[in-house]
Image (cartoon, rainbow, N blue to C red; front, side, top):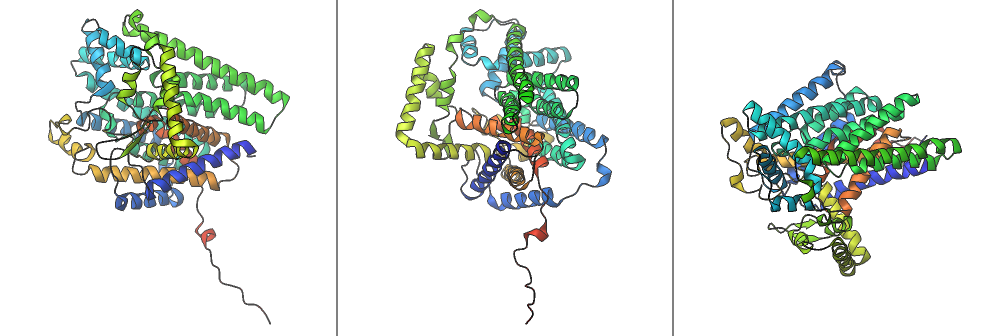
Length: 514
């Protein structure tokens, strides 16, 4: 039976998603490309209609189809990523160059260690990049080719994990829809050509949620503890690779507390409270161990990584409150600002915190409570209204000379997936329509559905968690990318079939007797 707090959380998630769709259609906060409504709206309508009225043929509802979709999806993702290799910049390039230097036996300089001190969260990426460089050297390949292939493997695992998450709750048809939509949004993205943390964390995010949901369903404490422990471990790995998956463990603990608040009993409290504490403590312990192990595995001189240089949490909160206009005249909300990084260079942690608190106070004084509410609403619409998830938006990646196709296949892929390709605006608009359809189906489903299973609540609270993260802290729509399979799964398990008969507003009046 659906409980009051759980029902409120589901309704809050549903209303938020529907509002994002309405804003994206009526008054979009443009990310890094302008979308054509003439393409977005028809694609949205068709995709939503398929979700609400479509049926999967029985022949496709067997156990081998999900495996085939995962394998083919991973292979296609690898091929697309390799075809569109380009000269990416920003953190992805910095970390790959460090990995090459370490492999060659060169010592990193002061500049590299200053970077790692500022962004120690990228050290696990250095481990992955160094692995790619080592394998590439052994096979005589380019490191990027190895890392893109690893990305394709992550896509394949993600697709199958999405199936495992959805099929017990909504059946094989919905699970297949989930796989295909995730493949379209994730497995064909231009991000495939950039070896970065989003794809590496993705299978652990959706896999961790799937394991946690399985732990809720399984009878017997041995099975529950085993699956729960694996879920926490997967989420810890995802968090170490990329910070944002921390919201998943918070969501799982929150769901346990919601269950307790809605249906209190001493016996239940004796189980749920220790379980929640154990999950949190285990997560923190595993995360710390994995972080320490990653630093040791890189071969870095860890004594040269200065912890006092790392910005405090309040600075990331302050950074999330900035507003700037890009070269195209579009407003960007709470994204990276170089001047805010420069402002804390050479400062002590206390001075960084004071700078951040002053920045936050100034923004409140300028905007006031209503202005801050409007800012965060616009920021949510800006982040969640991007079906391309900030593709080509980092560093100098958007410059035309970054992509130089080397063969006819690469040239063809560039025409569709390259920012300056002939068909990219159409492709981006179609992806936008599909993404908004996912949000609409999820939102309407959460508002229409009756009593929800715990798995639905886990997914909904996870979505609320990443929404809160992207609203409060520095970020852009790329920060949502690792959670796309979770959002699609939420749409699949919460969708309600629309009954056309129930939508009739007028019925033939009955004839009254005299």
